[in-house]
Image (cartoon, rainbow, N blue to C red; front, top):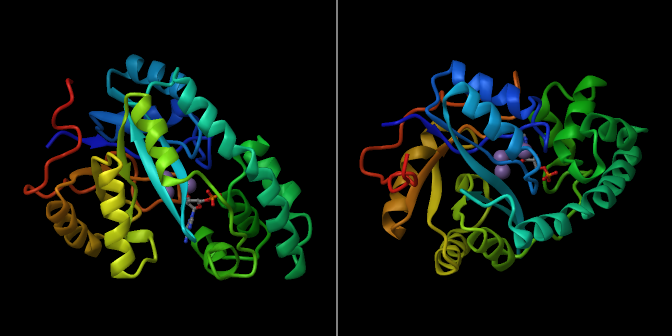
Length: 278
Ligand code: AMP
Ligand code: MN
Ligand code: MN
Ligand code: MN
């Protein structure tokens, strides 16, 4: 199997490496083609594409869109999107504006449990208020000793059901699909094993995603535990989805695997890239 890694972050969302640093890392690990898929943002694609050209590896322009499906937040990855698409650009801009407002509420909730000044600190880490992510709050909580690592900061404060969780309306599934498809991309459901959905709702979500033009689901991802791969392989085959593979890399010390260092997709699966010219 070719070493495609189709889910990675940079400083243009909540990653720690610049687009160029990310591409250089992927080159060192032997990645044949890499996608940059920042949250709700495509500003890094130009730099990443140029870096990949210099390094001689393949590049797939992508994005990871935040979607509200009922009370559940889903992530839908668009691959091979056209960064010049006005529909995509305008849509993403529209969902980014809410990040600062949500951040203020997260900051207020953290103050209530004893941590002052977290909004300012998280903003300084994000560098740009429209990129402000829970990950930036988590990094700050780790820095000040309130949590032992990022995962622990989510488990104690930031995950759904915890004291500083603030629910937020992102794009609808219909909108996200329309932005991806109208910009020439294919839609991939990110890390399906991370959504806390009862089986009936999970089936409904997958059926809706497929009905709206969804092509693939991630099976092998840094956001699944290895023991989950077989389950999502079965689901991909059952629903007739192509399969994707991606580290969901955020930075050194924060992600279980580096770009290009994941196990291959199971032989029974059809990779989402199988029909791409490369
Ligand atoms: P946001 O879009 O600001 O709500 O942040 C979502 C990001 O937070 C995800 O893309 C992950 O990078 C990170 N994240 C969410 N849940 C967890 C978790 N339980 N542990 C570690 N990181 C998480
Ligand atoms: Mn993230
Ligand atoms: Mn995600
Ligand atoms: Mn991601």
